[in-house]
Image 1: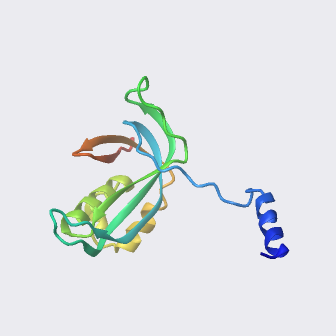
Image 2: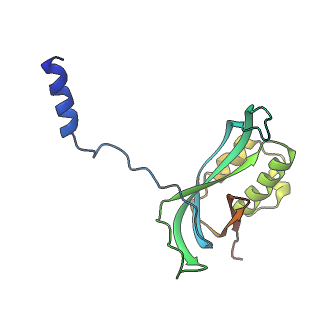
Length: 160
């Protein structure tokens, strides 16, 4: 090993982390009322794990809708639950199939506070762009256990 290598490692050990970005926490939010933003909506591919010795199904497509907690406005059970930090994130996924797209369309319309019919002529790209412009929406967030999986639902509501 040369002295140059040791010096380089030493300088790395002495460097501070001020230039490294701070990443948000990904959380399962407790039930309550939140103000949320939508920083990202995207299509992604994944491999669906096979069940009961069936083969895995690669190249499946889903829509991932990511929420960022702007504020925890009210918690259902503040004595038991710990509020998540502002800036924390969680996501919802929708399979890219007819039923999954229908659920996504309904959720997008609720988040954007428009009738679902208004989204029909738009492309997914356009809807993603509109959703990512949401800087604050009030929503009831519910997390429940579904056969060992935690499902989080977001029900936006808009004041008249």
